[in-house]
Image (cartoon, rainbow, N blue to C red; front, side, top):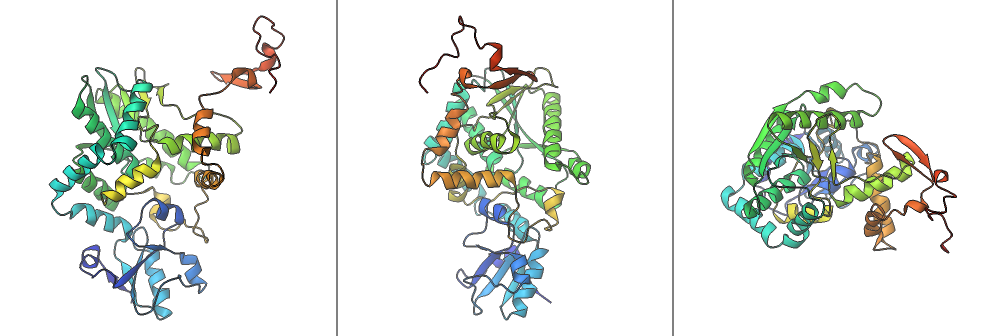
Length: 393
């Protein structure tokens, strides 16, 4: 039987006496992981390919989402002669333990807030305010539902809104709204613990979206996202809000623009704000529009914070990882493409972003307005418009 260690017990182990092998998929591992952890693949372990840098004279703690795949990985390692232990409850349990057992939580909260005011004032709060001012996202009298999924982006947004409220240039109200679409108990506890640690007074409401889309074969993630947004609008309006705020950042914006071209055959921007089509008087705003994901990660790591990743039923079972450790998501492919292009062009990210606001209309072959398709030929030959004369380019 595989030996297990709880997050609490692991906390008593002396640093340097063990290594952590994380067998979650690569995308999750790159988003957040335990300090010093090495990413591995259960599929490779099954084929007898052992992790690089793992010695037989050091204990190996194996972790996955909830301790299921890591148990099998630990068994394989033990059979190969390694001193392997399975982390009970997996990564989610470890994150919950870290948030719940923070030393001097009040001081930690103050330090986290101070980091936003000092160390991350330019990269986080400054860009947050810039987007709000440039796109007029927050106005006097607003009551904004700050929508929190439990991940690093939305939690960071909540803290930035609290800092904005502290300055209180004009009156507006905030509701920190968490929709539970059917989280596991472990993920729900992680969100609650992190919110308490960060001093964010969250309001929960329940839905069963995960159950509704679990058996949908075609585009379940798209359907889930649409349903989530509808529920958020509905609940926010019930609470007297006129806006919902989502935690999409700069990287989301440029990735979405490029994904549209590569995979959908269309050019479209992720807008900084939108009117709701189905809920009159409601708007969606994205105040983290200028903030880089790397800076959010830096804030998270600097403060020793850990958050949940995607927590839907498709990944809760630890059964969706591919043999090569990839999720195959189009967004991940696009993210890596941008990173590769950046190696030879350091301006690639800013150029993609600028492209969304520098579209010359006389260089567009076709466009759609309110679903109706139009062609440049409609105005070609209109000498008064003077739109389609040769300009040497």
